[in-house]
Image (cartoon, rainbow, N blue to C red; front, top):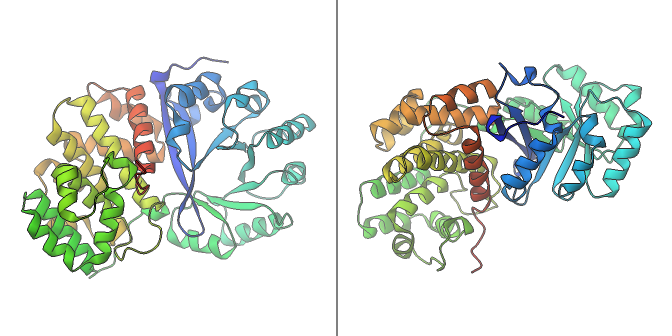
Length: 420
């Protein structure tokens, strides 16, 4: 097999949600930056030993997955290779590509891999064909590609699959809340796509009191206000205080002392850290109830912010202001999806610097290029990733991948209470 240099590979990850809109897993995508688009890259690069080794050994993707599983595309050569034995079977879902001919040898191999602890999935299912039967008898997940299907065809495909009642059905390429609801009503268990991050703007919608309070707190931190002023705001929002304590006590802060009050948080974390936790707090349940840790929007925002911060450290070492602006740009870029209001309205609520504003409004400046790059990684637009990386002097594909995997690990620790 062709050896692929790590400098030429971009790692993408796409979230997979459950029926409750909580994060369930990531699909891991490995593609070379060579060629005009991923379709022109040779031979399903996920099948090469060099890519698997690079991702799981050099980058530590397994640790970056945290409590979530990783889905990996498998062509025939990868399914039959010894390389899979080196992967953590309890963490990996092997997706049998639609291009794989379902021979007795493939069925036997999938049976063996399942016995070893791997979860087996059938990828890109569109309609039932008799050739799928041997695999449907042993796979646990079927990924249904809803993109080419109208509602009638999707219902027909779903009806055929329900002859195997133990199957988990996963709707992939879900691009809108309407599509997600339709699949939910058809009893799909899992959903893949960025529909949850698409802003649904509602004319006349205003920030709710908790969001306003958080925005006010963020403004006070940016203005370097006294702790007393911030405590006054929090006294009227006990749910926010509870969530702030949970976030600031998470493993991701690295704090060794349990934070017990707003004033204590400022002392222990410092204003720089407090600022980023207030930004993350925007993505949690303001009332303080329920489990917001696995919220895909929180995870995506946290990963964006941290990836950009780590890239900023490589681009301008020692420039903490640039790092802060990079983190803020990543976090705030998903606010329209969270709040259902235009970015212009959000920018009127809190005063940001010109560089952050340019990045958020028009993807302008260096921060705008970085934000476009993390968005391209999410959409796995490999050609765009390559072009944007080339425009950032001092960073390459390998550095971007390191930043992303470190950011995934950091985001996965948000909300975990520090046990030390």
